[in-house]
Structure formats: structure tokens, C-alpha cells
Length: 223
Image (cartoon, rainbow, N blue to C red; front, side):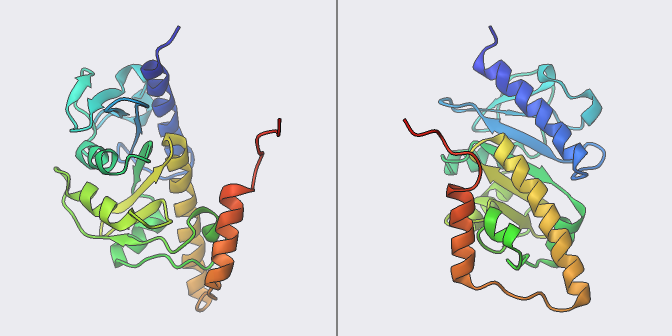
């Protein structure tokens, strides 16, 4: 029987293919990680490896200081950022990073995506905020993610002049947030070519977000 870590390696490997499927990454850029439930460990992709070559076997197991515990290759260059998020946001079970085109264009302008669509209110419950510029290589990006998203409804942040980081209760939820972030960033950009998007009242944003997060979809059957 596969261990929980083996199953998580498989899930993280498979979720990277969703980034390719939705055109959120090019070449070897971008990454998905997942926290190992109940452990101070995470699974993340190896650095600089083609998406076609990613398998459950070459996913890297790291501790939450970013040190490799199991794996024969170097982990993603964003490992320190992911690890920082897990250390400081215990509710987060998955982190994703992409350079998706439209969302990164907003990041290049240092501009938040305003909440002007019901789909945004559903998934993000607010604007998609901008985090500070930070260099890759240490936990500076992680600090910016935490500072921006802690206490914010949005599971996505546009790191200034860089790209998108998303969080979720698990890796799948973080991937979904990355997909939705690019989708609404594209739609709002197109809308602005036609004129100024119309705002949604805060009370309506609150209502939409509550319904989507608590009512939408299949609910557990009552006993």
C-alpha cells in the first residue's frame, strides 16, 4: 500500500500538468507544492526539470526550512518562499507559483486586479492584491506573500514585477486559484480596453463569496 507521502508525490506531480493544460507556465517555470499533513514537511518539484519529465518519483521532499529530506535533485528555486508560507500560515496546505501571461502583466504594472466580476467575488472575495518586489533565492518572496495575504480573502497575490503565487487548503485548491486568477485577470484586462469596469458593491461581494464558499457544490448528506 502506498504511503501518504507517496500519494502526495503523485498528486503534486499530476497537478503540475494542470499548469501546462491551462497555459499558466512556459518551459520549466512555475511550481506546485503540498504540505504533508501532520508533518513539518512538504513536497515540491525539482528545479529546472521539464514538465514532460516530472513524475511522482522525482518530486522532492523537504522540511519546512527548505532542506531536502528525500530526493536526488535540487528542489525548486522557490522552495524557500513556499517553506516560509507553510511555517507562518498553518492553515495553508498547498502553494502554487506561475508566470501566467495576463496576471503577470498586472504584476508588471504593480496593480491589483479589481473585484468587478461575480466569479472574482466567488473565488477571491476581494481584489487580487499586489505584493512587494522581492528577489528569488531566500525567503523574501515568502515574507511578501504572507504579509499580503494574511487576513485577506484572496488566495492569490501578484508579486510585483514577478508573477502569481496562490495558496489553498491543499495543492488542488491552490492550483484552482491560479487557474481562476489568470482567467479573471484576462477578462478584466479586456474589459478595460472597452471602458472602465463597473464596481460590485461590497455587500454583494460578501454575499457571493459566502455562498460560493459555503453553499455552492455538493454538500455532505445529512445523517
